[in-house]
Image (cartoon, rainbow, N blue to C red):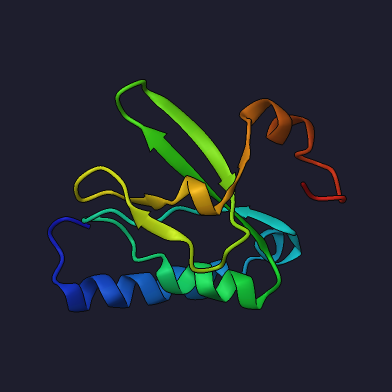
Length: 114
């Protein structure tokens, strides 16, 4: 979304959010993997807030660019985010529960959640 004005980006974000919350698979899911937007990406703050309103468990990726590693974090504090690398907002690991990818993979189809 690099070439869009903030108004255009907001319009496109609203359209994406609207479609997402009409999508049956998303509505049926208990656990959703979302992300905190970067500078030129879809604005996800309202999507994340709305996911909580729908009683979703939100999982956010945290990136360690120095080690080329991604960790998934289960959000247990609904407002828990902080700035990571410059211009890249990331979840705050101190306020979230870490879930290794292997555990997430094994529980992918589980109804019991995390």
